[in-house]
Length: 175
Image (cartoon, rainbow, N blue to C red; front, side, top):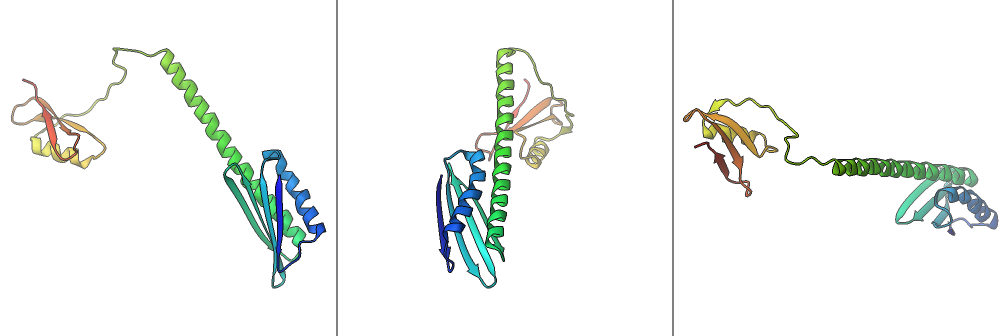
């Protein structure tokens, strides 16, 4: 743990340095000894301002508090930092847990993989319309890549689909 304490318009006394070091010890339970702390203390008008910056493995946590009592400002900063760290750790743990559950599900799916069987059925209503109308319907739904309809000219089921260039369309017609 590397601690750098600086004072602007206010001298960082040994008592203040010891107090900051003692309070920063509370963060050891989250990171171990592998983090850097930069504390800046300053005085503006009637208030003492404590700014504490914690850097660990690419993450940065920052708290700035103004109070009449510098020690109270430091305490508040440490509380804020602990809250930020807990929130981040909880998010990461939740994401890691979800990722591991997803991985486990994928492994189970891969073990029991079904081949050459219909595993999903989608029902839709095919309406009689012209090819031009079917293209307009397909354009209304940009997320879809095809549209099935009954061609009014042939009375047969047709499928109009977007080509890879997304500018033109193709049509599937039975013989």
